[in-house]
Image (cartoon, rainbow, N blue to C red; front, side):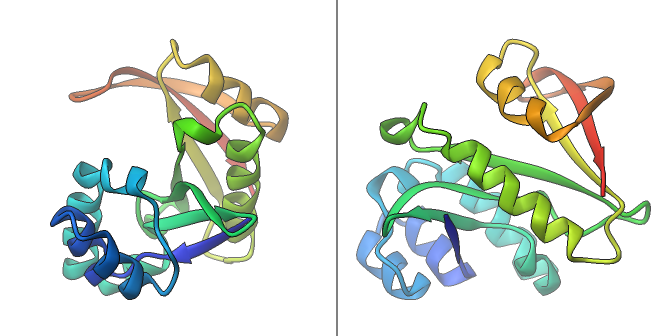
Length: 161
């Protein structure tokens, strides 16, 4: 598993529906499935345009055996408390192969490598059995819950690094 950084021009091309231009900007062939996540690319492109340092933390295509199998990253750089929140999604065509677990392992490794990070957070719908199973073997502990305007109730899990 490796990650390909998705720079703003790649995200903007995906939002525009131009896979060839997005792939060229990313330096790796991207997948049509990534284009369906345009809501996320809009958020992340604006985020990186406003804070270029966020580009080191967000918006990566997950690649396995040369194919884009999903995307993963953090919601942003470490906050004032040293917390980063993970986000990962596996292309439906590649689910149930342990790829989300591989993505999460890489994200945790990235967080551990940065001395500013003390905690990795995951916010997960209590109905999302797959994500709950993904975080379980890493030792995440449930620390509370929150209401997300778009996703509804989310349970909060944290891992000290």
